[in-house]
Amino acid sequence: MLAFPDLTIDTAPAAAQRPMKAIQEHWGYLPSAAARLAASPHALDGFLKLNAIFESCTLEPLAREVLIMTVATRNGCHLCVAIHTQRLAGMGAEPALIAALRSADSGPLDSAPALEAVRVFTRQVLDTTGNVGDAALREFLAHGYTPQNALEIVLGVGTYTLSTFANRLTAAPLDPALAPFA
Image (cartoon, rainbow, N blue to C red; front, side):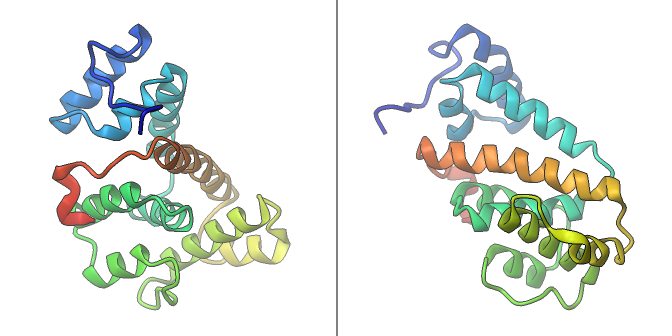
């Protein structure tokens, strides 16, 4: 896409170069999504900061991945689906769980009711723009989650809405390293 070429650390705006170096060191290469998001150092910095905050919240790592996959499939971000499929596999998630999360139309996660509660609540937050109502909140809380967790769902939705929308806007391609997870 002409409007969003893959920038390099040398061609990116100065404010984006440091975070790009950190991403490259972490991943072992510079993902195209970051190379394109670097066209706006503010957007790159915003995503990285929001993601770091989300990753430190009280939701367990698997629940965070359920949220991310729910947002990614709903928003049609093939790149996020591949990245987070790789993460789920690295966490030792069951293949059936990964397959169900990769499909926006899959049935309930019967073997993981607490994770299904995260997925359902995330969908409700997205569908109602946060106005889920008392019954939906009570159902989410009934699975052992807290009001803090409910707000962390909103944080994750915001973080990964930014990511999925940016990836789609910039037409970020799938990096070769992620091809096995596409």
